[in-house]
Structure formats: C-alpha cells, structure tokens
Length: 315
Image 1 (tube, rainbow, N blue to C red):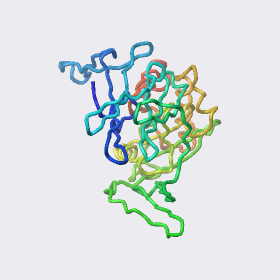
Image 2 (image 1 turned 60 degrees about the vertical axis):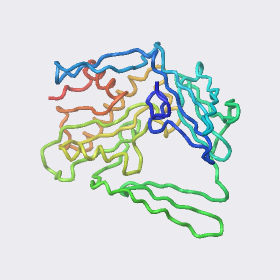
Image 3 (image 1 turned 135 degrees about the horizontal axis):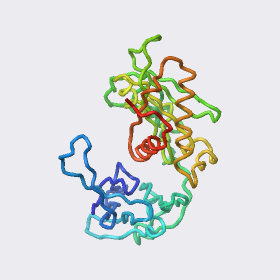
Image 4 (image 1 turned 120 degrees about the horizontal axis):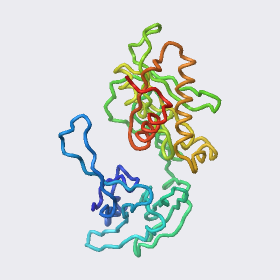
C-alpha cells in the first residue's frame, strides 16, 4: 500500500499528491495492491537469479484499489468519493482556486467522467472542464520539432508578451528524423536514422519504437518524444515510430477502431508502416532484422508477432 507516491495503477505515473493553492491541505492518492495477483518473472539471461515478484491485474482479476484523501495540516482527513467500484482508474487530478478537479475512468476504458470535489465533504460531482484563463493571464507552453526544451509565453491584456526562460540542459543529441504518412490509411509515422548514415551504405537493422495503441500517441512535432528513439538510431538502427489505429489525436473512428480487438488492427498498421517505409526508402531498411522495443502493450504485440509469424525473427 502506498500514499502520495506515483503509481502505475492510478494512470498518474508522475505524481501522487497535490497541494491546495493556499498550502493548507493536500490531496493524496492511496493505492492498495494487496488483492492484485502476483507473478514471478525470471531473467532469461541469468537463469540462476531469483525471480522478481510483480503484481499485475490481468483481465477478470481484481485491480488495485485507488482512492483519494484530503489531508489537512491540522491532521484532518476526508476521503474523496471517487466511486471506485464503477470507475477503477484515476486518470487526472488538479487543484486550483475553484477547488479539486479529478478524472475517473471505468476499467473497460469506455467511460470517463470529470468531477469537481467539495474539499469540505469529499463529495464529487460531474463537471465539464474545457480550460480557463486565470485573473486575465494566459500562459502558453510550446514545444517544436528540432527545438529542445519548452517555450513558455505569458500573455496579459495591455502588456507585452513575456517569456519564461528554460534552464533545462540541452539533450546533446540532434534529430535526424522524417515525419511521413504512409500506406492506404496514411499512418502517421516517423523514420529516424543515425547521424552518420550515408546514402548507399548497407541497409540498417530496423527497430520499431511505437507505443501502438490507445491512450498514447508518439507522432508529435516535438523534439522530446523522439530523443530516445534517436539514441537507438545512433547505435546503428533505422528506427520507425508509427501511430496506427487506436491512438488518439486523429479522429473518433480511428481511435475506436480497436474496440473489441486490440491486437489485429495494431499489428496490421505496424507491419503496413514498416513495409511502406521500406518501399519508399529502398536500400535503407534490412527487413531480415526487425526488432521491437518498449513496454506494456508493445511487449504483448512483439510476442503476438513472433507467434503469428507476421514478422521475421531477429537474427
């Protein structure tokens, strides 16, 4: 059980507590994984190592119990009514001058509600949240492809725009990237090559670095999402990132195309992107050596590809 810590079971992997604007109270996530099934993962590279215990809520098995607590500096505690039985996932939390605001989602991920929380009673009511300006001030945050870091502009009526300087360290890595739309379905894709690769050089082994499913898209005109992919390209790979059916940010039909079948459309689009890019870049990709990287959905997709024989096994 954890309190106030980032936890993958909440879908809020980067934060677990939120301060009230006046600093008098905290909104804290509580995650109880005691009912989640346990598995033991062995290291195939070191068979003698002790297996690692992990908890994972397979379909049809108990999920983690996620709740929110309002905790005051005076020791007071109020449990937020998140309706955990119907909405098992906590997907977003914020707290501004209007009070706490949360987003909860059903386990089948077909229903999502945005709720305002009464900080006195913990009662949550459904709201529609579309964004706002605070006290006549607008803050604009921008990222661009080829531009490291984030640009922040503060805009206020009657005053010139002001920028907030970024103190982030430069990544020390320049992208060699081509954003393209490929195949009959115009799959939004990116091809990254090593900075030292020259035309006419031997074809490169291929690394597919897509997320490949609902909840997350990678095809963005920003530098940060592609830095890790470029690092792998520098190791000697042609890296492909493709946002196939099921990824958000395109249109409702595209996002819902995986309803009832989260594997087949995803596999078809990743393979279609690979083949289309190979056709438009002859001599660049070595289709005899294709591997896939990442986690979660992609590991399942990699296993399915291998079992189905849809991709050649890597050498």
